[in-house]
Image (cartoon, rainbow, N blue to C red; front, side, top):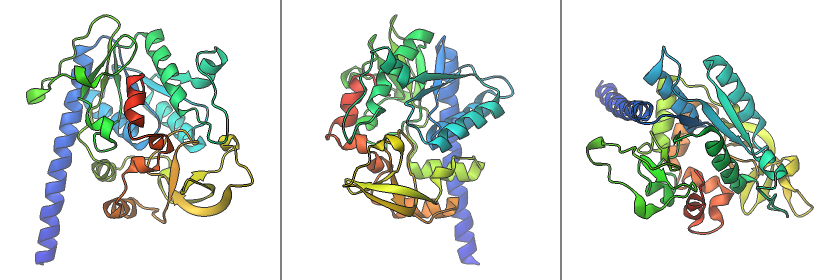
Length: 310
């Protein structure tokens, strides 16, 4: 009986903590709507941006969102993610703007990488900045969290970018007593992180509590994978597979979702949310450990952010 009582107390504490995180995120979303003239919510089809959409529903329904959803599509996304994106947007009845990296390449604004490890992931920055300029967005909401990576740990909730979309860590503003300063000069914009204080485990516990639907690739499934630099990459036509690659059919899932050319899978048999949560509790590697683009250098993410990466 004591065991059940302890479980009940632990569950109540977790509920209270998730309620606090939810309330903070909703407050931030409403601050964006109140302080900015033309915001947007960047939507990748991953669990964090899906969670943001769910929070936006709580913040603004029964009204429409005060911002469109914006997806920067590399053209090398997981098909499951794109299918989920389109299905969710149809259910929501909200506006979706898609910025295509292929268009940036066709216009000569971005140069396709060559070689075995070529990826379009870094090219997203060009398309993102063009999309921000084209539609005049003064704030872009995203699902980045401080626990993901060292550079993201430096971010404020309202992170100011200059007229070139660049991030300067020395220009970060204090955010005391939850006061968020959205004042910007003409040409500048703000990146907003409503779930900045959440951890990966918080996100999954919230997804479980709220019964939020996700793309199937977050759960264990069978697929062809290629071993690259000690990590399993989903086999795809644009992965530039050659005779040196080891191709296997394995049971895997993805902890993070990005461009297929830089997002690795993890060995897993977790087909249920409880199984995933237990995997994360036991893991000694962050979810960004499965992102090949973060392994270019110790400061890879920070350098990309200074160039305008989200």
